[in-house]
Length: 82
Image (cartoon, rainbow, N blue to C red; front, side, top):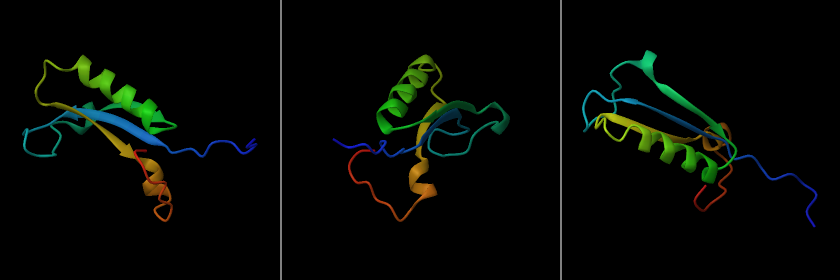
């Protein structure tokens, strides 16, 4: 048995309306939708999917998953789909 807690692999889910579908520039940074920070990729993916489905009628709206754990600790490579 492993008594150590599972390592947190934090992920940020956020989205916003893009100026152009081919770019990555948001129309209004004040209107970004910060969905939340999640402890693993699976929970972040579920949140991303839910947010994306809510805004499916707006072609310019995009949601993203940011692997915060990679930014916080770039030396650690957990591998796999995290």
